[in-house]
Structure formats: structure tokens, C-alpha cells
Amino acid sequence: MSTRREVILSWLCEKRQTWRLCYLLGEAGSGKTWLAQQLQKDKHRRVITLSLVVSWQGKAAWIVTDDNAAEQGCRDSAWTRDEMAGQLLHALHRTDSRCPLIIIENAHLNHRRILDDLQRAISLIPDGQFLLIGRPDRKVERDFKKQGIELVSIGRLTEHELKAKHP
Image 1 (tube, rainbow, N blue to C red):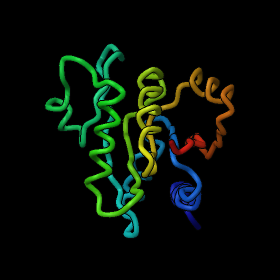
Image 2: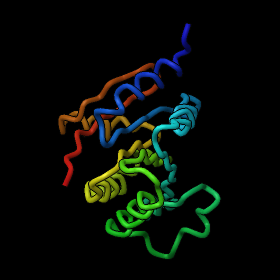
Image 3: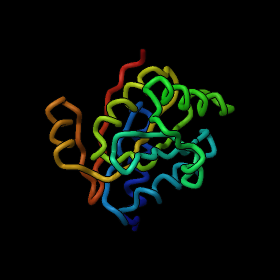
């Protein structure tokens, strides 16, 4: 019998062919990081993990390659949307294969403005799939529903599929 996490992993791998940008949301301890680690084991696909670092005021954001790089990656001013797109493109060009999976951790929904900028940056990139992982926020989830974004609940995890258009 499969565990809940294995069922969700199987579902994510199955659905991965149909989404370009996906939100995987859950509270602490719900299994988000474990799922990301399992996706990184895919031998047929290059997977890159980045981390979204948000200032304590929630007004500035940077993208770094790991949590330890947060100190070196942060500057006095936040990255612009174009700089975020540039960092994502840089991550894409580091790969050996086309259309890698880019996982961005710490994309918590309570940083709505920063996530909007990140989504716009992602829309500038023609190749690649993006899995954003973070904690949920009920108000933002309601906004997503109003925009017609599909919400599918799976146990303690919620997955948002955005039918992102290729530029």
C-alpha cells in the first residue's frame, strides 16, 4: 500500500506533462520538501532547485541557488522583475537538456506582490517548467479562484495549476 506522499508524488509526475507553472502548497511538515527531493531524482530530466529569499519586511526578494547563499545573494535593493527573469534564464542555461524542471522553494503565498513579479518573470522564459513550493494563504487562494485558476486539494497539500501561456 502506498503512503500518502507516494500517491502525491505519482500524481505530480503524471500531471507534470500538462503544466508549465505549478504551486505546491502545504503547512510545515506536510511533505513539500520531500516531494521536491523525489522529483530531483528523475533521471530523464534535469532538475534545478532555487530558493526565493524575501526580506523581513516582505518588500524585497532575491533568488539564490541555496539557503546558505542568501547572505551573499542579497543586495541593498531587491531584484527587479527583469533581474529575476535573468536569474531564471541563467539557471536554464546551466542545464544540459531542454525544458528542465526548476523548483523554487520558499514561494509562500503571503508575499503576493513578489509572487506576481515572479510569475511575470517566468512568463518571459519560453522553456522550462516551474514548481513553486511554499505555505498557503487563504486570501490569495481565494484570489486565485476568482481568476479561474484551478485548485486541487490533496490531503494537507494544495496544488495550483496555472495554464501559463508561452510568450
